[in-house]
Length: 121
Length: 420
Ligand SMILES: Cc1cc2nc3c(=O)[nH]c(=O)nc-3n(C[C@H](O)[C@H](O)[C@H](O)COP(=O)(O)OP(=O)(O)OC[C@H]3O[C@@H](n4cnc5c(N)ncnc54)[C@H](O)[C@@H]3O)c2cc1C
Ligand code: SF4
Image 1 (cartoon, protein in one colour):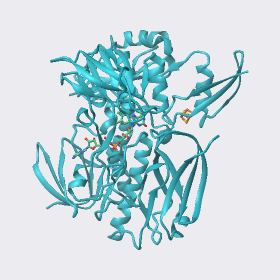
Image 2 (cartoon, helix red, strand yellow; image 1 turned 90 degrees about the vertical axis):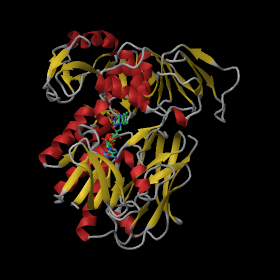
Image 3 (cartoon, chains in turn orange, yellow; image 1 turned 180 degrees about the vertical axis):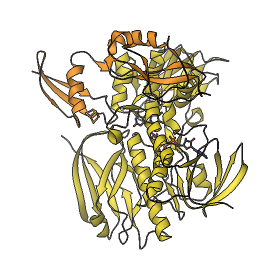
Protein backbone atom coordinates (compact mmCIF):
# COMPACT_ATOMS: atom_id res chain seq x y z
CA UNK A 1 0.00 0.00 0.00
CA UNK A 2 1.22 3.53 -0.73
CA UNK A 3 0.07 6.82 0.81
CA UNK A 4 -0.08 10.01 -1.24
CA UNK A 5 -0.35 13.46 0.32
CA UNK A 6 -2.17 15.99 -1.85
CA UNK A 7 -3.40 19.54 -1.47
CA UNK A 8 -6.93 20.11 -2.69
CA UNK A 9 -6.85 23.07 -5.08
CA UNK A 10 -10.62 23.41 -5.38
CA UNK A 11 -10.87 26.32 -2.98
CA UNK A 12 -8.56 28.45 -0.83
CA UNK A 13 -9.14 26.26 2.24
CA UNK A 14 -6.43 24.09 0.65
CA UNK A 15 -7.29 20.96 2.64
CA UNK A 16 -4.48 18.47 3.00
CA UNK A 17 -5.66 15.14 1.67
CA UNK A 18 -4.28 11.68 2.29
CA UNK A 19 -4.91 8.99 -0.29
CA UNK A 20 -4.17 5.36 0.45
CA UNK A 21 -3.67 3.29 -2.71
CA UNK A 22 -3.06 -0.33 -3.56
CA UNK A 23 -1.79 -0.40 -7.14
CA UNK A 24 -4.30 1.72 -9.05
CA UNK A 25 -7.08 1.16 -6.55
CA UNK A 26 -7.93 3.86 -4.03
CA UNK A 27 -8.58 2.43 -0.58
CA UNK A 28 -9.32 5.60 1.35
CA UNK A 29 -9.29 9.38 1.11
CA UNK A 30 -9.12 11.48 4.26
CA UNK A 31 -8.57 15.12 5.20
CA UNK A 32 -11.22 16.66 2.93
CA UNK A 33 -13.68 19.17 4.42
CA UNK A 34 -16.25 18.66 1.65
CA UNK A 35 -17.06 16.01 -1.00
CA UNK A 36 -15.27 17.99 -3.74
CA UNK A 37 -12.00 17.15 -2.00
CA UNK A 38 -12.55 13.40 -2.36
CA UNK A 39 -13.49 13.78 -6.03
CA UNK A 40 -10.39 15.87 -6.59
CA UNK A 41 -8.08 13.33 -4.94
CA UNK A 42 -9.50 10.44 -6.95
CA UNK A 43 -9.11 12.37 -10.23
CA UNK A 44 -5.65 13.69 -9.36
CA UNK A 45 -4.34 10.13 -9.11
CA UNK A 46 -5.55 9.39 -12.68
CA UNK A 47 -5.27 12.59 -14.76
CA UNK A 48 -5.01 16.02 -13.07
CA UNK A 49 -7.81 18.35 -14.13
CA UNK A 50 -7.94 22.13 -13.66
CA UNK A 51 -10.32 24.99 -14.32
CA UNK A 52 -8.83 27.37 -16.91
CA UNK A 53 -9.26 31.11 -16.48
CA UNK A 54 -8.06 33.71 -18.97
CA UNK A 55 -9.24 36.74 -20.91
CA UNK A 56 -10.51 37.23 -24.48
CA UNK A 57 -10.64 40.33 -26.64
CA UNK A 58 -13.91 42.24 -26.52
CA UNK A 59 -15.07 44.94 -28.93
CA UNK A 60 -17.05 47.97 -27.73
CA UNK A 61 -16.81 46.89 -24.06
CA UNK A 62 -16.04 49.06 -21.04
CA UNK A 63 -12.64 47.31 -20.97
CA UNK A 64 -10.45 45.88 -23.74
CA UNK A 65 -10.57 42.32 -22.46
CA UNK A 66 -13.22 40.12 -20.88
CA UNK A 67 -12.40 37.54 -18.18
CA UNK A 68 -13.44 33.99 -19.08
CA UNK A 69 -13.54 30.62 -17.30
CA UNK A 70 -14.22 27.01 -18.26
CA UNK A 71 -17.47 25.70 -16.77
CA UNK A 72 -15.69 22.50 -15.72
CA UNK A 73 -12.14 21.38 -15.18
CA UNK A 74 -10.15 20.31 -18.24
CA UNK A 75 -7.04 18.11 -18.34
CA UNK A 76 -3.97 19.94 -17.09
CA UNK A 77 -1.94 18.49 -19.96
CA UNK A 78 -4.23 20.28 -22.47
CA UNK A 79 -3.90 23.78 -20.94
CA UNK A 80 -1.55 25.20 -23.57
CA UNK A 81 -3.61 23.75 -26.41
CA UNK A 82 -6.73 25.29 -24.86
CA UNK A 83 -4.95 28.65 -24.57
CA UNK A 84 -4.12 28.58 -28.29
CA UNK A 85 -7.84 28.47 -28.98
CA UNK A 86 -8.76 31.02 -26.29
CA UNK A 87 -6.38 33.52 -27.95
CA UNK A 88 -8.40 33.38 -31.19
CA UNK A 89 -11.71 34.25 -29.49
CA UNK A 90 -13.14 37.73 -30.04
CA UNK A 91 -16.52 38.83 -28.70
CA UNK A 92 -18.65 41.97 -28.84
CA UNK A 93 -20.26 43.78 -25.88
CA UNK A 94 -22.71 43.52 -24.24
CA UNK A 95 -21.97 40.14 -22.66
CA UNK A 96 -23.70 38.56 -19.66
CA UNK A 97 -21.97 36.60 -16.93
CA UNK A 98 -22.25 32.87 -17.65
CA UNK A 99 -22.80 33.41 -21.39
CA UNK A 100 -21.24 30.58 -23.41
CA UNK A 101 -18.53 31.92 -25.73
CA UNK A 102 -17.05 28.62 -27.00
CA UNK A 103 -18.85 25.28 -26.89
CA UNK A 104 -16.75 22.22 -26.10
CA UNK A 105 -13.37 23.97 -25.96
CA UNK A 106 -10.81 21.83 -27.89
CA UNK A 107 -13.11 18.85 -27.50
CA UNK A 108 -12.64 18.79 -23.72
CA UNK A 109 -16.36 18.76 -23.05
CA UNK A 110 -16.08 22.06 -21.17
CA UNK A 111 -17.59 25.33 -22.37
CA UNK A 112 -15.72 28.62 -22.17
CA UNK A 113 -18.01 31.14 -20.48
CA UNK A 114 -17.87 34.86 -19.62
CA UNK A 115 -16.93 35.28 -15.96
CA UNK A 116 -18.47 38.75 -15.70
CA UNK A 117 -21.04 40.87 -17.49
CA UNK A 118 -19.75 43.73 -19.59
CA UNK A 119 -21.84 46.58 -20.92
CA UNK A 120 -21.41 48.34 -24.20
CA UNK A 121 -19.20 51.37 -23.84
CA UNK B 1 -24.03 70.05 4.61
CA UNK B 2 -25.63 66.79 3.50
CA UNK B 3 -25.78 64.28 6.36
CA UNK B 4 -26.16 60.54 5.72
CA UNK B 5 -27.08 57.84 8.20
CA UNK B 6 -24.04 55.93 6.95
CA UNK B 7 -21.23 56.51 4.47
CA UNK B 8 -19.26 53.50 3.28
CA UNK B 9 -15.81 54.27 1.92
CA UNK B 10 -14.81 51.69 -0.71
CA UNK B 11 -17.00 49.65 -3.05
CA UNK B 12 -15.12 46.33 -3.01
CA UNK B 13 -16.37 43.09 -1.44
CA UNK B 14 -16.29 44.58 2.04
CA UNK B 15 -18.07 47.83 1.15
CA UNK B 16 -20.78 46.12 -0.90
CA UNK B 17 -21.45 43.50 1.76
CA UNK B 18 -21.65 46.22 4.44
CA UNK B 19 -24.06 48.27 2.31
CA UNK B 20 -26.34 45.29 1.67
CA UNK B 21 -26.41 44.48 5.39
CA UNK B 22 -27.25 48.07 6.38
CA UNK B 23 -30.13 48.18 3.90
CA UNK B 24 -31.49 44.82 5.03
CA UNK B 25 -31.53 46.16 8.59
CA UNK B 26 -33.51 49.27 7.80
CA UNK B 27 -30.69 51.79 7.42
CA UNK B 28 -31.88 53.43 4.23
CA UNK B 29 -30.00 56.70 3.88
CA UNK B 30 -26.58 55.40 2.87
CA UNK B 31 -24.01 55.91 0.15
CA UNK B 32 -21.03 53.87 -1.03
CA UNK B 33 -18.10 55.96 -2.29
CA UNK B 34 -15.78 54.24 -4.78
CA UNK B 35 -12.82 55.80 -6.59
CA UNK B 36 -12.87 53.34 -9.49
CA UNK B 37 -15.18 53.47 -12.54
CA UNK B 38 -17.02 50.33 -11.39
CA UNK B 39 -17.76 48.62 -8.07
CA UNK B 40 -16.10 45.30 -7.11
CA UNK B 41 -12.67 46.38 -5.91
CA UNK B 42 -9.61 44.18 -6.28
CA UNK B 43 -11.75 41.20 -7.33
CA UNK B 44 -12.22 42.69 -10.81
CA UNK B 45 -8.59 41.85 -11.60
CA UNK B 46 -8.56 38.48 -9.78
CA UNK B 47 -9.94 36.53 -12.74
CA UNK B 48 -8.84 33.16 -11.36
CA UNK B 49 -11.36 30.85 -9.70
CA UNK B 50 -11.69 29.78 -6.10
CA UNK B 51 -13.88 32.50 -4.68
CA UNK B 52 -17.13 32.01 -2.84
CA UNK B 53 -17.03 28.35 -1.92
CA UNK B 54 -18.02 29.24 1.65
CA UNK B 55 -20.61 31.86 0.77
CA UNK B 56 -22.21 30.52 -2.41
CA UNK B 57 -21.04 26.87 -2.38
CA UNK B 58 -19.68 27.48 -5.87
CA UNK B 59 -16.26 28.01 -7.41
CA UNK B 60 -16.49 31.50 -8.79
CA UNK B 61 -13.97 33.79 -10.42
CA UNK B 62 -13.29 37.09 -8.63
CA UNK B 63 -15.38 39.20 -11.04
CA UNK B 64 -18.30 36.75 -10.83
CA UNK B 65 -18.20 36.84 -7.02
CA UNK B 66 -18.15 40.64 -7.07
CA UNK B 67 -21.02 40.71 -9.55
CA UNK B 68 -23.26 38.80 -7.11
CA UNK B 69 -22.74 41.50 -4.50
CA UNK B 70 -23.12 44.33 -7.01
CA UNK B 71 -26.45 42.79 -8.07
CA UNK B 72 -27.64 42.49 -4.45
CA UNK B 73 -26.67 46.12 -3.83
CA UNK B 74 -28.50 47.29 -6.95
CA UNK B 75 -31.62 45.31 -6.04
CA UNK B 76 -31.68 47.09 -2.68
CA UNK B 77 -31.17 50.46 -4.41
CA UNK B 78 -27.84 51.15 -2.76
CA UNK B 79 -26.55 54.52 -3.94
CA UNK B 80 -22.97 54.03 -5.26
CA UNK B 81 -20.92 57.08 -6.20
CA UNK B 82 -18.32 55.94 -8.75
CA UNK B 83 -15.18 57.78 -9.92
CA UNK B 84 -15.27 59.41 -6.51
CA UNK B 85 -12.24 59.60 -4.28
CA UNK B 86 -12.45 60.27 -0.55
CA UNK B 87 -9.64 62.69 0.26
CA UNK B 88 -10.22 63.23 3.96
CA UNK B 89 -12.01 61.77 6.93
CA UNK B 90 -12.24 63.38 10.36
CA UNK B 91 -12.84 61.73 13.73
CA UNK B 92 -16.19 63.55 13.95
CA UNK B 93 -17.25 61.86 10.70
CA UNK B 94 -16.88 64.52 8.06
CA UNK B 95 -16.02 63.00 4.71
CA UNK B 96 -14.49 65.05 1.89
CA UNK B 97 -14.56 63.63 -1.61
CA UNK B 98 -13.92 64.72 -5.19
CA UNK B 99 -15.45 63.60 -8.47
CA UNK B 100 -15.79 65.03 -11.99
CA UNK B 101 -19.50 65.92 -11.69
CA UNK B 102 -19.71 67.43 -8.19
CA UNK B 103 -16.15 68.70 -7.71
CA UNK B 104 -14.95 68.81 -4.09
CA UNK B 105 -17.68 68.13 -1.54
CA UNK B 106 -17.81 67.52 2.21
CA UNK B 107 -20.61 65.49 3.77
CA UNK B 108 -21.21 64.20 7.29
CA UNK B 109 -22.50 60.86 8.53
CA UNK B 110 -23.90 59.34 11.72
CA UNK B 111 -21.75 56.28 11.01
CA UNK B 112 -18.82 55.62 8.68
CA UNK B 113 -17.62 52.21 7.49
CA UNK B 114 -14.06 52.07 6.21
CA UNK B 115 -13.80 49.36 3.54
CA UNK B 116 -10.81 50.73 1.69
CA UNK B 117 -8.83 47.57 0.85
CA UNK B 118 -5.04 47.26 0.81
CA UNK B 119 -1.99 48.26 -1.24
CA UNK B 120 1.17 46.39 -2.21
CA UNK B 121 4.62 46.86 -0.80
CA UNK B 122 6.87 48.12 -3.59
CA UNK B 123 10.58 48.23 -4.43
CA UNK B 124 11.28 51.04 -1.96
CA UNK B 125 10.31 48.68 0.86
CA UNK B 126 13.04 46.15 0.05
CA UNK B 127 16.76 46.23 -0.42
CA UNK B 128 17.91 45.69 -4.02
CA UNK B 129 21.00 47.36 -5.41
CA UNK B 130 21.71 48.16 -9.04
CA UNK B 131 20.02 50.12 -11.79
CA UNK B 132 16.41 51.32 -11.79
CA UNK B 133 15.23 50.26 -15.24
CA UNK B 134 11.65 49.76 -16.47
CA UNK B 135 10.33 46.22 -16.11
CA UNK B 136 9.98 46.10 -12.33
CA UNK B 137 6.33 45.93 -11.27
CA UNK B 138 4.35 44.87 -8.26
CA UNK B 139 2.49 41.63 -9.01
CA UNK B 140 -0.84 43.42 -8.62
CA UNK B 141 0.12 46.08 -11.18
CA UNK B 142 1.05 43.38 -13.68
CA UNK B 143 -2.22 41.61 -12.90
CA UNK B 144 -4.20 44.75 -13.55
CA UNK B 145 -2.40 45.40 -16.84
CA UNK B 146 -2.99 41.87 -18.07
CA UNK B 147 -6.48 41.09 -16.82
CA UNK B 148 -8.16 44.45 -17.25
CA UNK B 149 -6.17 46.23 -19.96
CA UNK B 150 -5.06 43.13 -21.87
CA UNK B 151 -1.35 43.97 -21.82
CA UNK B 152 1.38 41.45 -20.95
CA UNK B 153 4.20 43.31 -19.18
CA UNK B 154 7.07 40.97 -20.15
CA UNK B 155 8.30 37.75 -21.74
CA UNK B 156 11.01 36.51 -19.37
CA UNK B 157 9.94 36.90 -15.81
CA UNK B 158 11.29 36.39 -12.32
CA UNK B 159 9.16 36.85 -9.22
CA UNK B 160 10.38 38.06 -5.83
CA UNK B 161 8.20 36.97 -2.93
CA UNK B 162 5.87 34.00 -2.71
CA UNK B 163 2.73 36.00 -1.92
CA UNK B 164 -0.43 34.71 -3.59
CA UNK B 165 -0.66 37.44 -6.22
CA UNK B 166 2.83 36.60 -7.46
CA UNK B 167 2.04 32.88 -7.62
CA UNK B 168 -1.16 33.50 -9.51
CA UNK B 169 0.67 35.76 -11.94
CA UNK B 170 3.35 33.09 -12.46
CA UNK B 171 0.69 30.74 -13.84
CA UNK B 172 -1.21 33.43 -15.71
CA UNK B 173 1.86 34.78 -17.51
CA UNK B 174 3.06 31.23 -18.29
CA UNK B 175 -0.28 30.45 -19.93
CA UNK B 176 -0.02 33.71 -21.88
CA UNK B 177 3.30 32.55 -23.34
CA UNK B 178 5.81 34.22 -21.02
CA UNK B 179 8.62 32.22 -19.46
CA UNK B 180 8.65 32.40 -15.67
CA UNK B 181 12.12 31.40 -14.50
CA UNK B 182 11.45 31.19 -10.80
CA UNK B 183 10.13 32.62 -7.56
CA UNK B 184 12.48 33.66 -4.75
CA UNK B 185 11.25 33.79 -1.16
CA UNK B 186 13.46 35.22 1.59
CA UNK B 187 11.78 33.14 4.32
CA UNK B 188 12.44 29.39 4.63
CA UNK B 189 8.72 28.77 3.97
CA UNK B 190 6.23 30.01 1.41
CA UNK B 191 4.03 33.00 2.08
CA UNK B 192 1.33 31.92 -0.35
CA UNK B 193 -1.49 29.46 0.13
CA UNK B 194 -0.39 25.82 -0.33
CA UNK B 195 -2.95 25.39 -3.12
CA UNK B 196 -1.30 28.18 -5.10
CA UNK B 197 2.17 26.62 -4.70
CA UNK B 198 0.66 23.45 -6.14
CA UNK B 199 -1.50 24.75 -8.97
CA UNK B 200 0.52 27.82 -9.99
CA UNK B 201 4.14 26.63 -9.60
CA UNK B 202 4.31 22.82 -9.40
CA UNK B 203 1.73 22.29 -12.17
CA UNK B 204 4.00 24.25 -14.53
CA UNK B 205 7.40 23.19 -13.18
CA UNK B 206 8.32 26.69 -11.96
CA UNK B 207 11.03 26.49 -9.28
CA UNK B 208 10.53 28.06 -5.86
CA UNK B 209 13.78 29.22 -4.23
CA UNK B 210 13.16 29.35 -0.48
CA UNK B 211 15.60 31.36 1.68
CA UNK B 212 16.62 33.34 -1.41
CA UNK B 213 16.33 36.98 -2.39
CA UNK B 214 17.06 39.23 -5.34
CA UNK B 215 20.26 41.13 -4.66
CA UNK B 216 20.87 43.09 -7.84
CA UNK B 217 19.16 44.36 -11.00
CA UNK B 218 20.83 45.02 -14.38
CA UNK B 219 19.82 47.08 -17.44
CA UNK B 220 19.70 50.75 -18.33
CA UNK B 221 16.30 51.49 -19.84
CA UNK B 222 14.71 48.07 -19.59
CA UNK B 223 15.56 45.35 -17.09
CA UNK B 224 18.07 42.86 -18.57
CA UNK B 225 18.83 40.58 -15.67
CA UNK B 226 18.88 39.95 -11.94
CA UNK B 227 21.04 38.22 -9.37
CA UNK B 228 19.57 36.12 -6.62
CA UNK B 229 21.40 34.73 -3.60
CA UNK B 230 20.69 32.41 -0.74
CA UNK B 231 20.19 34.07 2.65
CA UNK B 232 21.23 32.91 6.08
CA UNK B 233 19.07 32.83 9.24
CA UNK B 234 19.76 36.58 9.60
CA UNK B 235 18.21 37.04 6.12
CA UNK B 236 21.47 38.45 4.74
CA UNK B 237 22.83 37.09 1.44
CA UNK B 238 25.45 34.35 1.79
CA UNK B 239 28.61 35.01 -0.24
CA UNK B 240 29.26 32.65 -3.14
CA UNK B 241 25.61 31.61 -3.62
CA UNK B 242 24.76 34.15 -6.33
CA UNK B 243 22.91 32.99 -9.46
CA UNK B 244 22.21 35.18 -12.47
CA UNK B 245 19.02 35.16 -14.58
CA UNK B 246 18.46 36.99 -17.86
CA UNK B 247 14.98 38.46 -17.51
CA UNK B 248 13.08 41.49 -18.81
CA UNK B 249 10.60 41.59 -15.95
CA UNK B 250 10.73 41.36 -12.17
CA UNK B 251 7.47 41.10 -10.26
CA UNK B 252 7.37 41.98 -6.57
CA UNK B 253 4.96 40.02 -4.42
CA UNK B 254 6.29 41.00 -1.05
CA UNK B 255 3.25 41.81 0.99
CA UNK B 256 0.05 43.77 1.32
CA UNK B 257 -0.67 46.60 3.75
CA UNK B 258 -4.10 47.98 4.70
CA UNK B 259 -4.85 51.27 2.97
CA UNK B 260 -4.55 53.20 6.20
CA UNK B 261 -4.02 56.86 5.21
CA UNK B 262 -7.57 58.09 5.86
CA UNK B 263 -7.82 56.43 9.29
CA UNK B 264 -4.34 57.54 10.26
CA UNK B 265 -5.02 61.17 9.34
CA UNK B 266 -8.28 61.06 11.29
CA UNK B 267 -6.19 60.21 14.37
CA UNK B 268 -7.68 56.71 14.67
CA UNK B 269 -5.59 54.32 16.76
CA UNK B 270 -3.68 51.88 14.56
CA UNK B 271 -2.32 48.38 15.25
CA UNK B 272 1.43 48.32 14.51
CA UNK B 273 1.26 44.67 13.41
CA UNK B 274 -1.80 44.61 11.11
CA UNK B 275 -1.14 48.27 10.12
CA UNK B 276 -4.92 48.75 10.14
CA UNK B 277 -7.15 50.39 12.77
CA UNK B 278 -7.69 48.77 16.17
CA UNK B 279 -11.34 47.65 16.49
CA UNK B 280 -13.63 46.35 19.25
CA UNK B 281 -16.17 43.51 19.06
CA UNK B 282 -18.56 45.79 17.12
CA UNK B 283 -15.78 46.53 14.62
CA UNK B 284 -15.72 50.12 15.84
CA UNK B 285 -12.38 51.96 15.75
CA UNK B 286 -11.12 54.35 18.43
CA UNK B 287 -13.27 57.08 16.79
CA UNK B 288 -16.97 56.96 17.78
CA UNK B 289 -19.17 55.77 14.95
CA UNK B 290 -16.30 54.88 12.59
CA UNK B 291 -16.11 51.17 11.75
CA UNK B 292 -13.61 49.17 9.69
CA UNK B 293 -13.59 45.83 7.86
CA UNK B 294 -12.02 43.84 5.02
CA UNK B 295 -8.48 44.27 3.74
CA UNK B 296 -8.49 47.85 5.03
CA UNK B 297 -8.66 46.42 8.56
CA UNK B 298 -6.24 43.50 8.18
CA UNK B 299 -5.17 41.58 5.09
CA UNK B 300 -7.38 38.58 4.34
CA UNK B 301 -6.68 35.64 2.06
CA UNK B 302 -10.33 34.59 1.68
CA UNK B 303 -12.93 36.91 0.25
CA UNK B 304 -15.70 34.93 1.96
CA UNK B 305 -14.37 36.06 5.32
CA UNK B 306 -14.16 39.63 4.04
CA UNK B 307 -17.86 39.58 3.16
CA UNK B 308 -18.69 38.01 6.52
CA UNK B 309 -16.60 40.47 8.49
CA UNK B 310 -18.16 43.41 6.64
CA UNK B 311 -21.58 42.08 7.57
CA UNK B 312 -20.55 42.07 11.24
CA UNK B 313 -19.11 45.58 11.01
CA UNK B 314 -22.37 46.75 9.43
CA UNK B 315 -24.36 45.11 12.22
CA UNK B 316 -22.12 46.96 14.68
CA UNK B 317 -22.98 50.19 12.90
CA UNK B 318 -26.71 49.34 12.95
CA UNK B 319 -26.58 48.84 16.72
CA UNK B 320 -24.66 52.10 17.11
CA UNK B 321 -27.21 54.01 15.04
CA UNK B 322 -30.20 52.44 16.78
CA UNK B 323 -29.04 53.24 20.28
CA UNK B 324 -27.33 56.46 19.27
CA UNK B 325 -24.04 55.63 20.87
CA UNK B 326 -21.33 53.15 21.50
CA UNK B 327 -21.38 49.95 23.53
CA UNK B 328 -21.86 50.28 27.28
CA UNK B 329 -19.53 49.37 30.12
CA UNK B 330 -15.86 48.57 30.37
CA UNK B 331 -13.80 46.78 27.79
CA UNK B 332 -11.63 43.70 28.18
CA UNK B 333 -8.53 43.52 25.99
CA UNK B 334 -7.86 40.55 23.76
CA UNK B 335 -4.17 40.11 23.06
CA UNK B 336 -2.02 37.86 20.91
CA UNK B 337 -0.11 35.45 23.17
CA UNK B 338 2.81 33.17 22.41
CA UNK B 339 3.07 32.17 18.75
CA UNK B 340 0.37 34.60 17.55
CA UNK B 341 1.15 37.85 15.73
CA UNK B 342 -2.21 39.65 16.00
CA UNK B 343 -5.86 39.25 16.93
CA UNK B 344 -8.87 41.11 15.51
CA UNK B 345 -11.00 42.36 17.26
CA UNK B 346 -8.72 43.69 19.99
CA UNK B 347 -11.29 44.06 22.79
CA UNK B 348 -14.79 43.02 23.88
CA UNK B 349 -17.61 44.46 26.03
CA UNK B 350 -18.62 41.93 28.76
CA UNK B 351 -21.49 44.14 30.02
CA UNK B 352 -22.81 44.69 26.52
CA UNK B 353 -21.58 41.87 24.27
CA UNK B 354 -22.10 42.11 20.54
CA UNK B 355 -22.95 38.39 20.43
CA UNK B 356 -20.63 35.47 19.78
CA UNK B 357 -17.30 36.86 18.63
CA UNK B 358 -15.09 35.22 16.07
CA UNK B 359 -11.46 36.24 16.39
CA UNK B 360 -9.19 36.38 13.37
CA UNK B 361 -5.51 35.77 13.99
CA UNK B 362 -2.28 34.62 12.36
CA UNK B 363 0.50 32.43 13.72
CA UNK B 364 4.08 33.74 13.71
CA UNK B 365 5.72 30.71 12.10
CA UNK B 366 4.70 27.43 10.46
CA UNK B 367 3.80 24.67 12.94
CA UNK B 368 3.02 21.03 12.19
CA UNK B 369 1.19 20.18 15.40
CA UNK B 370 0.07 22.83 17.82
CA UNK B 371 -2.32 23.62 20.63
CA UNK B 372 -4.47 26.72 20.56
CA UNK B 373 -5.19 28.10 24.01
CA UNK B 374 -7.54 30.91 24.87
CA UNK B 375 -7.32 32.14 28.44
CA UNK B 376 -8.64 34.95 30.55
CA UNK B 377 -6.29 35.54 33.47
CA UNK B 378 -5.73 32.08 35.00
CA UNK B 379 -8.88 30.61 33.51
CA UNK B 380 -8.53 28.51 30.37
CA UNK B 381 -11.51 29.08 28.10
CA UNK B 382 -10.49 26.79 25.30
CA UNK B 383 -7.78 24.38 24.21
CA UNK B 384 -7.86 23.00 20.71
CA UNK B 385 -5.48 20.78 18.79
CA UNK B 386 -4.44 22.29 15.46
CA UNK B 387 -2.51 20.82 12.53
CA UNK B 388 -0.38 22.43 9.82
CA UNK B 389 -0.58 26.09 10.75
CA UNK B 390 0.97 28.66 8.41
CA UNK B 391 1.41 32.44 8.77
CA UNK B 392 -0.09 32.75 5.28
CA UNK B 393 -3.38 31.24 6.40
CA UNK B 394 -5.66 33.24 8.65
CA UNK B 395 -7.01 31.30 11.64
CA UNK B 396 -10.28 31.81 13.48
CA UNK B 397 -11.52 31.10 17.00
CA UNK B 398 -14.94 31.69 18.49
CA UNK B 399 -15.81 32.91 21.98
CA UNK B 400 -19.49 32.69 22.83
CA UNK B 401 -21.61 35.58 24.05
CA UNK B 402 -22.04 33.82 27.41
CA UNK B 403 -18.28 33.44 27.82
CA UNK B 404 -17.76 37.09 26.95
CA UNK B 405 -20.36 38.21 29.49
CA UNK B 406 -18.43 36.31 32.18
CA UNK B 407 -15.02 37.82 31.34
CA UNK B 408 -13.25 39.79 34.07
CA UNK B 409 -9.63 39.64 32.98
CA UNK B 410 -7.64 40.22 29.82
CA UNK B 411 -7.92 37.48 27.20
CA UNK B 412 -4.92 35.99 25.38
CA UNK B 413 -4.96 33.78 22.32
CA UNK B 414 -1.81 31.65 22.12
CA UNK B 415 -0.62 28.83 19.87
CA UNK B 416 2.09 26.53 21.14
CA UNK B 417 3.94 24.07 18.97
CA UNK B 418 3.96 20.48 20.24
CA UNK B 419 6.15 17.63 19.07
CA UNK B 420 4.12 15.00 17.27
C1 LIG C 1 -4.50 39.76 -5.86
C2 LIG C 1 -5.37 39.11 -4.85
C3 LIG C 1 -5.73 37.78 -5.03
C4 LIG C 1 -6.65 37.18 -4.18
N1 LIG C 1 -7.05 35.89 -4.39
C5 LIG C 1 -8.06 35.34 -3.65
C6 LIG C 1 -8.60 34.04 -3.95
O1 LIG C 1 -8.11 33.33 -4.82
N2 LIG C 1 -9.68 33.61 -3.25
C7 LIG C 1 -10.23 34.36 -2.26
O2 LIG C 1 -11.23 33.96 -1.66
N3 LIG C 1 -9.71 35.59 -1.93
C8 LIG C 1 -8.65 36.08 -2.60
N4 LIG C 1 -8.14 37.33 -2.29
C9 LIG C 1 -8.66 38.02 -1.12
C10 LIG C 1 -9.94 38.79 -1.39
O3 LIG C 1 -10.18 38.94 -2.73
C11 LIG C 1 -9.80 40.16 -0.86
O4 LIG C 1 -9.39 40.00 0.45
C12 LIG C 1 -11.14 40.95 -0.89
O5 LIG C 1 -11.64 41.04 -2.19
C13 LIG C 1 -10.89 42.33 -0.35
O6 LIG C 1 -12.05 43.10 -0.35
P1 LIG C 1 -12.07 44.57 0.24
O7 LIG C 1 -13.40 45.12 -0.05
O8 LIG C 1 -11.58 44.57 1.63
O9 LIG C 1 -10.95 45.36 -0.58
P2 LIG C 1 -10.94 45.84 -2.10
O10 LIG C 1 -11.55 44.85 -2.98
O11 LIG C 1 -9.55 46.24 -2.39
O12 LIG C 1 -11.89 47.10 -2.11
C14 LIG C 1 -11.52 48.36 -1.60
C15 LIG C 1 -12.15 49.43 -2.46
O13 LIG C 1 -12.02 50.68 -1.85
C16 LIG C 1 -11.75 51.64 -2.82
N5 LIG C 1 -11.09 52.76 -2.16
C17 LIG C 1 -9.93 52.75 -1.45
N6 LIG C 1 -9.64 53.97 -0.99
C18 LIG C 1 -10.61 54.80 -1.42
C19 LIG C 1 -10.85 56.19 -1.30
N7 LIG C 1 -10.02 56.98 -0.61
N8 LIG C 1 -11.96 56.71 -1.88
C20 LIG C 1 -12.81 55.91 -2.57
N9 LIG C 1 -12.63 54.58 -2.73
C21 LIG C 1 -11.55 54.03 -2.17
C22 LIG C 1 -10.88 50.93 -3.82
O14 LIG C 1 -10.91 51.52 -5.09
C23 LIG C 1 -11.50 49.53 -3.83
O15 LIG C 1 -12.48 49.37 -4.83
C24 LIG C 1 -7.18 37.93 -3.11
C25 LIG C 1 -6.76 39.25 -2.91
C26 LIG C 1 -5.85 39.84 -3.74
C27 LIG C 1 -5.39 41.25 -3.46
S1 SF4 D 1 -11.88 19.59 0.33
FE1 SF4 D 1 -13.54 21.05 -0.03
S2 SF4 D 1 -13.15 22.66 1.51
FE2 SF4 D 1 -11.26 21.48 1.34
S3 SF4 D 1 -10.02 22.58 -0.19
FE3 SF4 D 1 -11.16 20.99 -1.27
S4 SF4 D 1 -13.00 22.03 -1.98
FE4 SF4 D 1 -12.12 23.32 -0.39
